[in-house]
Length: 363
Image (cartoon, rainbow, N blue to C red; front, top):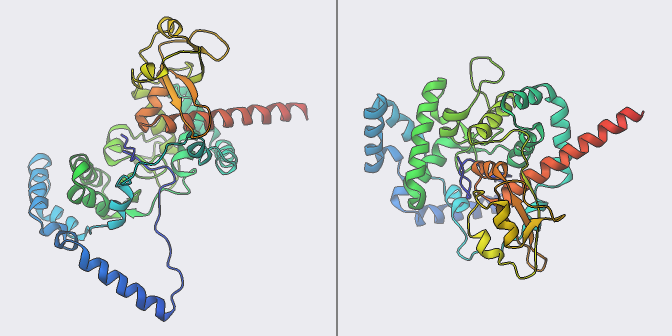
C-alpha cells in the first residue's frame, strides 16, 4: 500500500493553488501560456482516455474479469482527463537531492501536528481506545499517522482521483502497471460503494481521505468502525482510525513490543554493511553486539532488529535500532524517514498526554 513517491499517499499532499490576480493583462498572459502548454502536449494527452486503444483494451479486460458493462466504463473514462500536475509531482527530480533527516523531521515534528494531535486525541479518545484494544496498536501511533498523512484530515488532497489514476495508468510508463491496478480497484470500489467513479478526490497518487489509502487498500483493509454500514474516510475519522489500526495489525504489528531505539556504534563498526542487510529486522542482538552495535545505554538490542541510518548533511548521522513494529510502519510508507517521523511524533504525543495527566492530577 505504499509508494515513495507514496504508494498510498503523500504526506502534506500537494494541492492546487488558487487563482491569484485576475486583472485583464494577467488573464491574457495566462491564456497565452495555457495555449502554449496545450500545443506542446502530445495528442494522446489531449484526447479523451476513452478514445485510446490501450484504454479500450483495459475496459475489455475489466468487463471480462469483473462483469462490468463496457459502456459504463467507457462513459466514466471519457470524463477523465490527462493532468500534467500529476506527472510533475510524481516524477523524481532529474538531479537527486541530498537527503536530510533533520529537514524531513521538521516537516512533521512541529507545533501544528503536536497541538493538533492532542486535540484530535481528546476529541476521539473513546474511538482510539477501542481501536487500540481491538487491534493492539497504541493510540498515539494511529494519531501520528493521521497527523503525518493529512494533518488530521485538514489536507486530504483535491485531485480528481479518476483523472489522476488514468493519467498515471496510461501516461506514466514507469509505474503504469501499478496504477492500472489502482484504477481497476477504483472502479470496483465505486461499484461496491454505489458511487460515481468521478466523485472521488484525493492525492495526486490516488490516495483517499484521512488515512490516504489507495483504492486497493480500502478494499483490502478498510473497517466500518462506526458500524453504519459503509466506509467513509471523508466526513469523519472514525472508520480511518479503525482501518489504520487494522492495517498495521494485518502487517504484523506486535502489541506492547518496541518500535525503535537509538543505537550506539563502537569505533570502527562497519555500519554500512549492517544497513545493507535491509529494512526488515533480521539482525540478532548477538550479531549486532559482535559488530559493535548496542542500544545507546550499552544494552543489547531487545530483539531482531535492523540498523537505521538517519543522515543530515553537516551533522552526525543518527543510528537507530528498528524492530518489527518499525518495519510494519514502513509497510504504510516504505521510507525509514517516514517511519521514524511517525514514531517520534507518536512519542511526542504520548509524552505530552502523560504530562497533561500528571498536571491535571496535581490540581
